[in-house]
Length: 116
Image 1 (cartoon, helix red, strand yellow):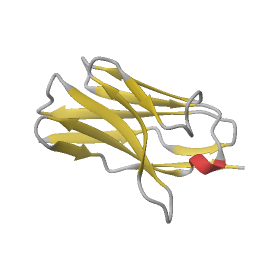
Image 2: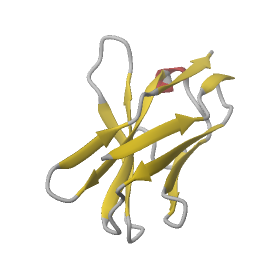
Image 3: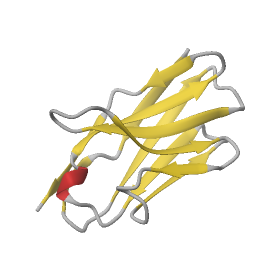
């Protein structure tokens, strides 16, 4: 089992920045994918960014150039640096870890609200 604890959400004005953190504990494999998803009210959950244990990254088009995902493998922690935030970035952000055969774990979510 894997437990994920997120932190760093909050309220920020448009153009501002926030940094989300997600610490994983439990049985963590050396090879995995850590990612951030978000879900806005009335919308489906969407993948924002992901990073493999080898450091390869993926970004949704809507956040490219503004968000940066990184990870500290020694701490089993993934980060999401969010710059130039827009009101449309407002959502609950969820940390996710995929590993092994079907291992798919989620954090409890952290609210990010961007005011205009």
